[in-house]
Image 1 (cartoon, rainbow, N blue to C red):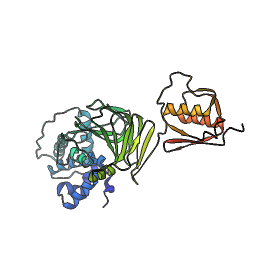
Image 2: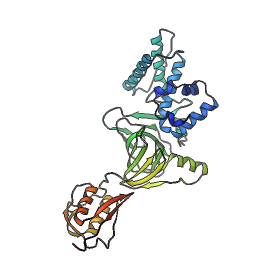
Image 3: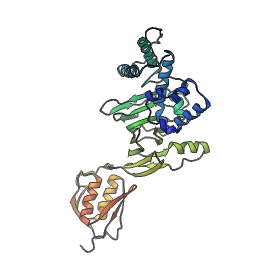
Image 4: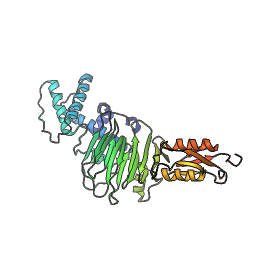
Length: 375
């Protein structure tokens, strides 16, 4: 059986799977090997494993599996209780009594709450901390992982202990230690999040997201790692970040060498990671932002300006590289007021004026055309 088979399983589906239940209830060398490999390949699924394990441990105390309708009602009831009480940090231990069937399941639900089902984790043998270790976690203070989910339709801002923030988009979640290690700051993302990282050169900030690792010191960037989508992207707004695969990180740890295929991203650049073939590439973001705002409103107003001047100003303002043949376009000039248009719209206007075209090759904009000598 391939570990990828379980990649999209929900906690409920894992809890009902015979092979997963065998690992939890009657582990063997075979099940240990299989599920440890699954955790290494898919560290972002740690929450689902923890939830399913907590469910099965609670079931053991009732001795009987629920029917489909009872199971669905129980999952819904547990998640509703968590949503209503996720700010509660103290849970009273529950004593389970052998009474009616449904009362037993209510008691099991309370056990699940005690175990931290959903958004809160406890320090069990297969806790989030040890699962994180398999993904590259090297914290030395045994930090407890917390989790925030955005179940709303609006962005949700999560404040981290170092002052950094994560703006989670709907249906996204982030896991992080309540207090960061003194060595590094490590978090886990599933979905889409915009990070604004507090600068600290002595304490790198590292984000793990679906097989991709993003490391920064202090910057702002967006990561998209949507479940069941075979593409992860990291787009930089400010500062610089290093991006590499989790596989490359593990290989470097085994060899005590440098991380292979490590990409350095600057503002308006993004890394695209294909989880299917594990290919990591770098290119411009879809809509480059204005990085260096002009001091006056006339900065992009051109009157018979040499096209070389136009391209130079665009490069400086957006932090991009525009490549063209200076000899071919030496006779080209531009008279046009460019304002708040996006970069690519500005390039459309320039190229239409001088009879040229442009293409984006990786992180470069390449201009081509016959030039303006005969105009």
